[in-house]
Image (cartoon, rainbow, N blue to C red; front, side, top):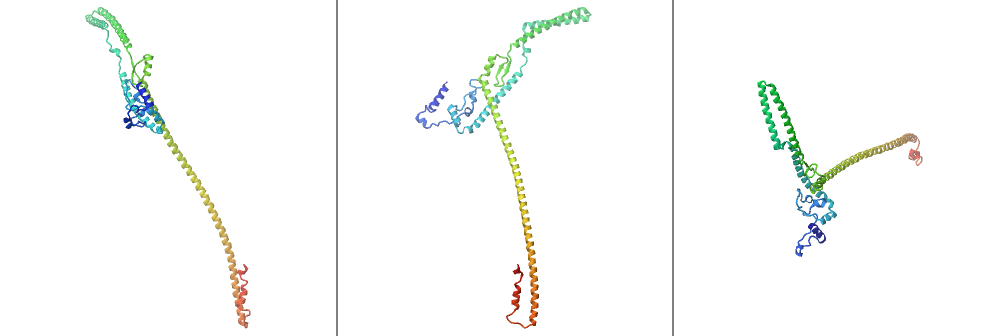
Length: 356
């Protein structure tokens, strides 16, 4: 009650409400990320609060619990960054609690397993024990007498004694049966113990439903149930996170493989396209070369024809000049008329260059 009122006053007036002005100068307001603040209480629950006034009481938490700091933490932009850290620390603390509890549970199981049938250890009542001792003594004496009579040859008397022994044995059996029934009744009245696997408490087997319900709803049972449930939940989330990470890695590897295969396929198409382009270029160059060779061959044929024609013309000119010179050598020369150079020039006017 006092703690609730103090928390309410802290929320309304601040934690420094009782400080003097001088003390407030050196006062530093606590933030949720300070070491003095309990991270367990910020994210889930503090185990120190679960077992108050029970056999498993952990005592007060050494760090600060404050509702206002918890609200500040939930509204902080760094909330998601600190939650995994606080949850991991809480899981580690809970694991230690459960390990200690499991050792206690194992010891409890061993204790129950070592219980023996106490019925055999319950002594007989004094009256029954005396009756049993008396009957056994009578049987012993009658057996001795019967043995002596048998040695003397008195068979009938010996057989009569043996019948008495049989009667006494029947009485002994009946007496022991009655004693056994009494011990069973005593043991049936004893309370058999059972062990709670959640919190390690010893219970009375087949106890009344009200007492069983009272145990199940008790602080210790509920507290250890919360601790075990949190550990199971935390491990499940971690396992799921590992599976998701593994699937993400596998998917990334598969995407890279597909991308590589697609790139290889694309490179293959590019090479095929380049090969086709080179082939078309080669064919185009071959056609151009063939056309050039055809033109060259055609041009070469015309040049050859022209050269042959020029050669024939030169031969004809040489023959005509030679004949003309012989004729001139026989006849007088008239100056400035029909000069060989003039004739040669006129002859040249019909050269192939003028014909073409």
